[in-house]
Length: 174
Image (cartoon, rainbow, N blue to C red; front, top):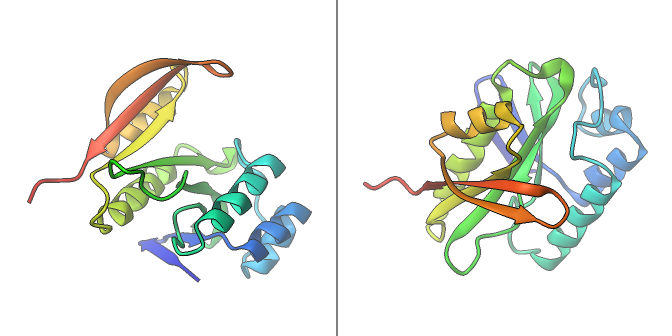
């Protein structure tokens, strides 16, 4: 099992089995992970389509464990999800996303989870930068990115979402 930690915050990489448990519900997922039932589940942007997309990603990249979906655990309880939208592309860019359940929001968990993903990404020598996208009204998401060192790189129009803002953080120079 792949795990990343920052104090009392733990990221646990999803597996096919954890996704199957989550398909049953948050309580089944918590039992699978040996955690108490979550206060609320699922977090925003996490549904059956997300899990199916993650399964396909993991199948396409079996030699890239960890470049998919992670569960956020805080204070010993499920708090949200985060992850990568796949391994790095040919330019060395990897994209992240994150979502925290409503009862656990405004505690800095999204920032800490995103920071762990960025740190993990930069341990991979193939990674030159980390990207994340958000919608203009999502101020909390933008704040997470700014706290993690991201800068607004592009505004674009997505046919389904409308205006989308793309943020980037480059590998730190040593």
